Amino acid sequence: MTPHIGQRITAQFDALSAQEQRVASFILDHFDDLAVYSAADLARLTGVSKSTVSRLFKRLGFESYRTVKDHARQLRNLGVPLVIDANAMQEEAGAPFHRHLQREQENLQRCLNGIAADQFAALVEHLDSARHVVVIGFRNSYPLALHFRQQLIQARTQVRVVPHPNQSLAEEIVDLTEQDVVVLFGFRRRPAAFAALVDALEHSPAKVALLADPTAVNAALTSNVVF
Image (cartoon, one colour):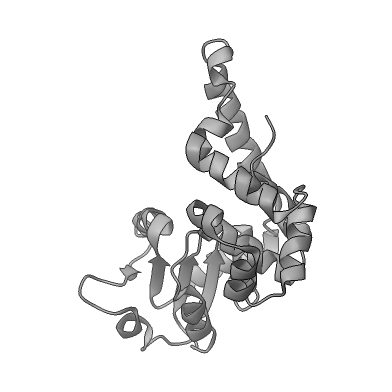
């Protein structure tokens, strides 16, 4: 089965230029709306030139933006999960499960291979010695933030997930000190205010650890520890 555009972006993301990554991240965050955007729309919304948009799609294997839109419409009609697992019904019982397990193991191995030992040790030391640990996660990242907090409180106190109901995030981070650690989960889809949050944390005295997928590369440049 030919990979769909989301899979192609994920596979090639690290090799893209900074401007191409900006367009690619926008596509991943607005996947369902791709069929209704024009190339000019993508260029305007991401702040790049139309030639950058065209160059990105050619790198992803599309002859023109028309073929991209046709591809996007096909995905909307079929549903992306059906595209990924279209051969599942032809496989013997249990094969889809084992294929999924293998992919998860490969993803986990790639993740672990990308973590430097000294970087991981520094994060553990920060988490152990911090006055407070503040854990932040939005949308898909929120359950991860809750789980991380639940595990961390087995080893230490003063760990909280923010923001609390009926409170703004600004109220939660305004009093951060150099003795505090912020663990920010930034997996897509990220809210529009995510970049502003990273900027605010960068200018705070606290240490910041960002756990995210490769599309958060721009935010990663400002964090103390990145995974």
